[in-house]
Structures are given as structure tokens and as C-alpha cells.
Length: 436
Ligand code: SF4
Image (cartoon, rainbow, N blue to C red):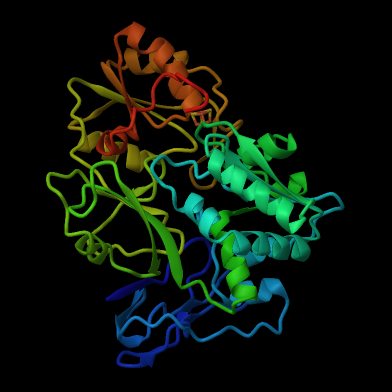
């Protein structure tokens, strides 16, 4: 069963145009974009029969596993084809990609490729850069042409030396002097849009500002390959690269696998593909340990889903627990969900990093990944009576918390601990080595 959510990413949900019992082909539009609104259509990721249409979802019973699809019409401008493809930004909130392609940059502008793959454990962007290098550079050049960008930069963490070498060799072979690879520090969140702009073109935009204010447009790796697929292969956004990890019977401890699955694939079906959950487990996380969300019973892969991680049981905390929230980490709701899973009966003190500035929804960081000092927040938690603190901080701020909290008798927990424990990775704490 394929479960297509009508509410994917940012914008008005598309309007269903299919009926129950109707047979649909892979690539066929099943919900149309709302006219004159920020909205993209939704396509059938499989050939099959529509079994349910309601205000939230369209369910399709697949028939076989066809690879082919109904092609898009490409006799339109690139942005329009990308809109018709239903392409959303595949690295985060799911902003419609066509809007960025409509931007006209000033002379000297940049298309930036966010290849930081900032979340620990996830590696499908790295895999795709190695396996679909042609598509990545093709998408980059289509985006540069559409926006008038003169230069392209691929920002990738310097620890991924093999991928950097591969991309650099490709640029040389293909003679693409207007595109370059720029190594980034191995810290979370260097892939945050304004962090990437700061670390590539040396401009720190204010919280809430758009990349165009720095004469830049930012796409993630898979969005650029999606632009190529829409424009060159006439393919709608119907498949998704994801990382699978965690306590699944067919995965060894610490192993990860990269898969390409149809959008709408049920998480329960993916779990079954891997022989079920290796119990005991804590949760099924969709996305990475900083910004991922717990999967509900009817969860399915969406156009922006980056991974499925089945975690082990949550570590348990003793004594009163306070929380310090980060702008680039879990929301308040998610932090409290993690705290409850760690056995905290109530929250004793709640603080937000002083770099986090409130937005219409959530927070944005003033200077992502550069710690403004955390001692005041840790003292606030201690004053409220907490003996332990759960943080959602970036690498730099976690390092700072570690410089004060243990000395004040406060035990430190990080929102990513459960995932890191599950994967046998070192917990995020004090920075030991910039290269790791
Ligand atoms: S400085 Fe604060 S708000 Fe910004 S990334 Fe670090 S923890 Fe988050």
C-alpha cells in the first residue's frame, strides 16, 4: 500500500483529481497544485488502483513494480517543469524548488549545493554524489542557468575526503571551472542554509533572511538531481533516496543501507523488508537525530524524508531534568517527547539558547553553530532545581555546556544520544578532534 500525504512540505496542499477504484499509472498526477498559490502537484509513485481519497491522503494499491513513468512535458521554462514535477526541497522543510528557480540573481551570484549531510548516521546524499554525479552537476548547471548564477559551490564536510576527491576529479574531467568543491568543518549545523552561506561566500545573513540577500540560491544534493530528472528525464518527484539504520533484523549493529523507494512507501512495509524490528527498541525515527520525528502508526516516506532509524531503548535519567532548546535542533514538543521517553516525569527548568531568535514558527539561530556561551542557561536550569539537562545544541554549544554543567553537578544528555548509542557512535559532547 502506498500512502500519499497531501500535506508535504511548505505550501498549499494539492487537490485530489482521482477517484476510488480508478487505475493510475506511475507518474500520473493524482492531486493538482492549487492555482495562484505556493503549491505543487502530487503524482502516483506506482501503477495501481486508488483505494482511498480523503482530505489528508490518497492510498494506492500497487500492481507490480514498474520502473517507467508517465513523462512530464518539457516545452516550458525550467522552473515550470520543476513545478509540474512536484519537486520540493529534499533536505529539510520541503520548500517548493520551483520558487527558487524563478529567482534572478545579480551578476556574480552563486548556486550553493548543500552537501553537508549534517545529521549523523544519514549518508544517502554521500551515496548519491558518488553514484549520480552526472545528475548532480547537470542539476547544478540547470539551476545556474535558470537563476543567472555565475558560479556554483558544493559545500561538503572535509571528513568526506573520498567524495571530495571524486567530485573534484569530475570537475576537472568535465572542465567545469565555474563550479568548485568547498570543504566545510565537521560540525553540526554547517548545512544550515545561512551557515552554509557564511562558510562559503563569507556573508552572515540575519536570522530569517533569505539566501537571495547574499546573491545566492541554496539547494541540497537530491533537489539538484531532482531538477535534472524533471528537466532532462521528464521524471516527476516520485522516488526518494533514504538511509535505513538501527535495530532491524536484517541489518548488522551499526550498519546503514541506502535505498531508493517510491514516495508514499509505508514505514511498516520498510520495517518488514528488513525482517522486522530487533527488539527491544525505543522509537522509529524519520530523519536524523537532531531534526527527525517519531513515526506514527500510518507513517509513510514523504518527498523530504531522509532516513528511517529504529533506535534502541532510550537511556533513562534519574532526578529532575531541565531542557535547553536549540534553534537548529528539536522543537519544544520533540524535546519533551524525548525527555518523557527518558523517564522524566516533569521538566524542571526550560531554557532556549540565547542565539535562538523567535520566528513565526519556531526559532532561527543568529549565527548557526557558533556558541554565544551557555553558562547562564545552565545556571538557569540549576536554579530551577534540575540535576540533569537535556540539550538539543549544535556541536559548538554542546562543547560549551560540557565546560560548565558537569562542574555544577548537572548531568548532560543530548537529543541524539539514543541514536548514537544505537549505532555504536560516540555521543556528542566535548569536541575531541575537528577531523572526526
Ligand atoms: S548557537 Fe545556539 S541556537 Fe545556534 S546552533 Fe548553536 S545551540 Fe543552536
